[in-house]
Structures are given as C-alpha cells and as structure tokens.
Image 1 (cartoon, rainbow, N blue to C red):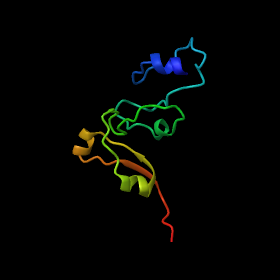
Image 2: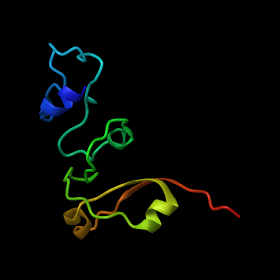
Image 3: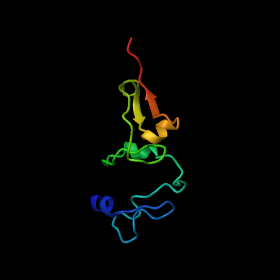
Image 4: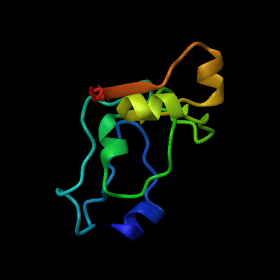
Amino acid sequence: MIRLKEFAMYTCGGVFVPSDNILHGTIGVQPNVTCLAPVSAHYYSSRMSFPLLCFNCGSTDVAEIAAELKARFQTVHPVCHDCRENSFKERTRGEKKLKK
C-alpha cells in the first residue's frame, strides 16, 4: 500500500490500482466520483495518513480550523483559503452533546 501511495497518480475516471498490482480488486474508487465532487468523507476517516485537503476543491493549502468548531463537532473537514474567501465553510459532522 505504501508503494502504491508513493507512485499512484489518479485521474478522474481512471483506474486507481493497476491490474498487475496485488491490491487490484481490494482497493478501488467510488464509480460516481468526479473531479468536481467534494472530497469524500472516507478520505478523512481513512486509517492511512493522507495529507489534509480542502473538502471542496482538494487544495493542500488548508485554512486553520477554529478551535470552537473542533470543540463543537466530532468531525470537521477543512477548507482552503480560496474556498473560505468564496464563502465555503468547513464541513462538520456529529455535533457533540453538551454535558449538563
């Protein structure tokens, strides 16, 4: 998997794992994902240590996530500086229950 991560170059609509790779048929790409689709929540929940990406455009230039959002939600997917300037907000999941 590490070698695949290092050498794989994925293009929308293409094959992520070449047919001659031992992981072919084990690892795949969701069929309806396009380059215009937001980054899937599966990317962020993966056990692999992928770099943080803007969930909207895939940029690696992610803006810092506010501590208040981290405290309020179980999961916060980041946005980049450009998307934030264009009114996109972090994608949040699982609002934490407030202790009484």
